[in-house]
Length: 436
Image 1 (cartoon, rainbow, N blue to C red):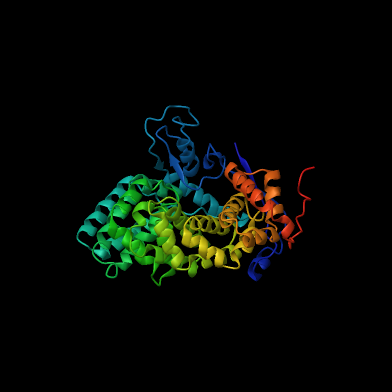
Image 2: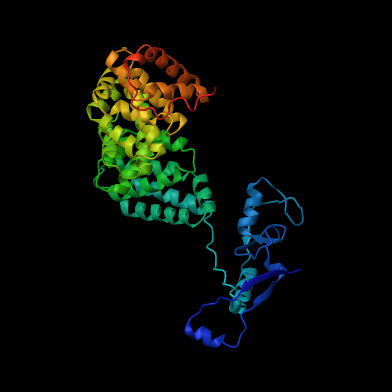
């Protein structure tokens, strides 16, 4: 059984190729692929042939997906697999490579010799050596082993699963703690290497055990905060991405963490770092036991003005998180005073209602309500003039979350008595979005 491989000859070639093909018509060529070169699952030409215990050869990617989907039988024979070990079929692979070379004139490229995936044994061996090296504070050896893990990680998705499955995250956290408890400056190279690969792993792992290990070590948290204030932009970004995963109760106790996070907002590195930083700040000012004290410290360092800048220029995710943090800061007296004193705060916050996302609108309405709590006439009139009354009506009409609905309803009650005293300067919305 054969599969047709059709390819039109390329029209432009080098001068030598043109001379060679001058007598050949530019036509469609039909090439047949031997059936034993095709994967029984995907029916494509195999690039990395491997054999199961049943003796049937498949392409590695296809059979691994089959097994990972929970299948315990051979797709061709339907026999129950006694083992899930797969063996590279070098003979078939070399035959396929030879066939590709023989048919290269038809545009078929030779399949590369695949790299052998890392085994659990190899990963465990490296972990053992890493732990041994960290006990002896052998930075050179540890950098070498971490570099090997990084190479394996980049090679394939399968390698990533093997690395994570063999507890590398926890080992790296232990090594990180060993070096950070001695000296940050003296071991900055190995610490940066570990920091980078931990941020890769956090994307595809639950990170539970590793987070617990890092959070339980004050030296590790101190080191992460120390990197926030460093000059290396990559290390600063990796540090803030990792801090996002830490326990806020432990993190809020670390000296310099507030200053470091504010610096990330003040001097942005990139969108991902800014969002991670805002997420961390939000957790600290909304759920930590000492959130009021932490919030006031953020306010003292000028975070409010930096948040407003982020709201003006930031993308959707940044804007949502910045409004969320601003909403939390308005829960403390000092934060509310600073926001009220900033002439741009109310206009900017009200402008974002109905313009970014339901979440952003919810935070914005919460901020406005907190600004109007004392029912100061000047504030209420300004809010009406900025078009908040119409926007709140629209929100109630189109629907919103219960908490947002409650805030909007309370605001409308407060504003309604001052409508006659205010001339709305933003009438573009009017009532055209309301239902009859």
